[in-house]
Image (cartoon, rainbow, N blue to C red; front, side, top):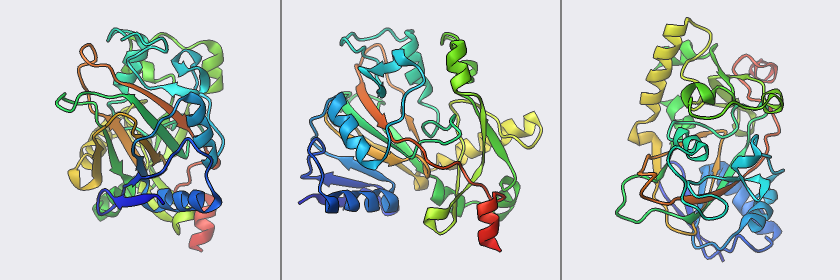
Length: 302
């Protein structure tokens, strides 16, 4: 029987005595679905997985999402290589484009927000992790439900009509060392806009913040300078420890999180000195991001 314990008062659990490589029973799957809905983050300890078993586990929760760039994947386009280590086991140079993309992950973000239907869950497996005494390499999470609840009332009013443009191509604005996307890649992922205040019908229409720092650094619906200033304020605000959980990796940890309500970032580390090899499966989104003025939300309010 799996052993589940809370990691913080507000979100996150650790699961032991459970093998994610094996086929799940109906009751086990339902328990995990309820746990990820209620607690938003799960760490499964002591797993033994590869790309195939990670893909199989991820499919329990929905369809696998394909990554936009094939050369950033691991074996199959649905398994993203979140590493400074190549598929062949080479420790990559810090200036390698694959490592530059990982460095961009040190900015707060939610996976696949550049899609009209952003991902639901991300599931990340630690194949190689940093030594315990090394600085950095942790993955930090911030709870956007809590962050919204604690906003001053004037900020809630300010944010309610605002939005942000999310563009996969615009990662190049922040990381100019990355090569240009192909025409096909750009065409497959045109810019999208999402509301800053996200409304969750599956959580009794509760509200959360929803924004990113890894594709743009401004908020829309106001002047550019005001948008940059507000974005900077939001980044500082959600970084407060009372909203955050920092995952200290151990080899063979498998972590799963809800992209709809958590932002995350990697804590920077010495990319030249340490190897950090992880693979990720992502559950495809099924619905667009709803805001306070979306029809479904307005009808519910009436």
